[in-house]
Length: 324
Image (tube, rainbow, N blue to C red):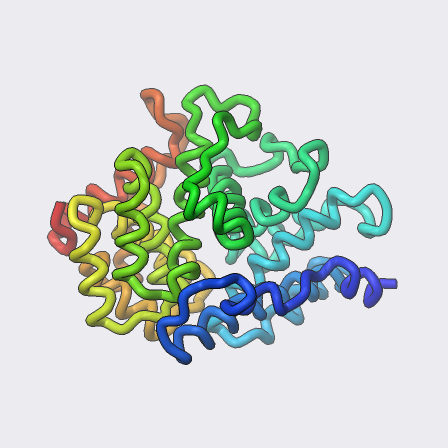
């Protein structure tokens, strides 16, 4: 039954091929990197769909090569969210919570992004209740949703630059921040859409309204650091193209560094990207995210998550590695 559930629920791997998606191919090496990421995401999804419990899924996930393991946890986060939402055949609820109570907590940023992937595939009445999630990290769900839409509905969300007039989740979003967080996910997807070609990513971002560019660059900086696929000289050129948005590009890179450090998944391309974009090591960039993280509610109209992002950007500028 579990094997059947895996086969029924898991998307076809062909959907992650750059040729299927119509994405730019910079080089065979970059294509292999991005397609391996896609395949690993689906592997993690399949593990979660078939596992008897989150603990069993974790045993399988820990066997994934460290460079790509975070993407497997992201896929598992999507699968557990969908299983929890299924009225029958999901094996009972609480799987996502159980996953986050175990090894999934080391990958909480990626798991939250996976929740957003699930929401893009589920009808709204099956979306998880926002009150069950961390109120600070909640916006990573929107990031995942935005990535999914830009990845699978590229014409609408990237080329036509679609933005929903009002995103219905969470219901209590007085600052209307949801679309900004979705843009961060779209920016992350642009790294994939453009085959890790930073020059093409920058040109595409420059085609968006100015009000959206900072969030798009933040997402692109995260992808460039976490996913990789670009050499040092390419990253240097990308950083220069970012211009006034370099602090937000660095903020996204610091988020990626924190996600890698927290899960003990640092690999050489993370080191290179953090040094180029943040002007420091990934360990120091991760420390900046810890030191600037809001401890509770913040003053003003912006959610604590956005205040956190701005604090990270400002701190990286003050350290001297990022020019404003």
